[in-house]
Length: 450
Image (cartoon, rainbow, N blue to C red; front, side, top):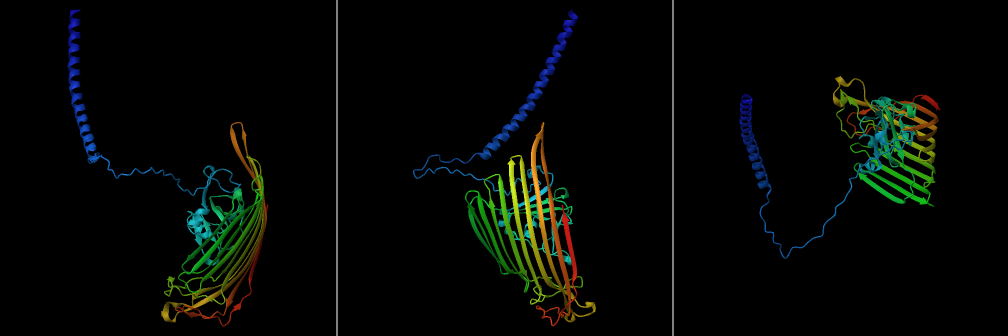
């Protein structure tokens, strides 16, 4: 027992010595850390301490009342698309959707559909190069989108330059959409949302003046009647020269009345008419010489002002019936009649012969005359039904309906001979002495879809 006691006492003594040594080491470390921390805190406190000032108030001091500032950030955000085919919020729709609301169209002065789509990624604009589509010639995600332009979910047939004076927003759906919209390219669709009557009266007039000179005026009137009906009228007029170009002018005007009844109830009927007219002098630019544009005055116009023209007449009538059976069942049917007439005659400049061996002063420019006449007519109906229901713990949304349409397109093309040439430095081309129209190349097409 004595031996065990001595061993235990020696073990406890060694443990106490190790504990004292560890305590002294930790004390030195903790002391150093605390010292550094106190020094840093003291330096920061010294740096933030304001200079001493006299706290005594002056007799001339005036106590001002507090100011309460409140505001909300203006977000150009639309939560849900206008299309019945897409009944869920945009954030829950498995497709890339870009929406340009009316306020953005106004604040950025986007007067045409082309202007609005310049800011949308994935869209490129063309001008009908190579004899292609005229008017709004668009490419969406690398695919031609000429047949993928819609108004309120119904196809907008025709080749013309669309104005935004009657639009509330522009929706761009990217990616394959044939399941919802039928035939078309795989790039997506571009949907124009028209202005409709409201139960709140308002009267707006706006005007814009620009270089060129250019001028534009719009009128937007909305007047309710009897608490459930309303009439809305949109007018537009534009006229201007093209900055930096001689002779090139543009004129555009439009009228869009619409009438709605039942706006405060479950059943709504909206009738609308849209007209847009264009009268322009087309411009095909400068001739191409030795790998690039000819070195001439950039204002030079090589067309024939007394002969060239571009004229459009667009008539679109729409009748839409909507009914909400309840909050989970909605119905809409749209009937549209459209007539689009387009005519143009343009002079396309080109260098005569092989100018590589000629001095610049001897080079001549020819003008090829091309005339086009096109009439598009269409009768379209789109009927849609959206139902939301639950089965056990699962929520479902059913979208069903049918489309029926008949579209006719009659196109005639002419070419001209006998158009005189002009010198490359002439700012104004001479008038033609004689021009002979060749026999037209005619194409007629019809499309029926159900």
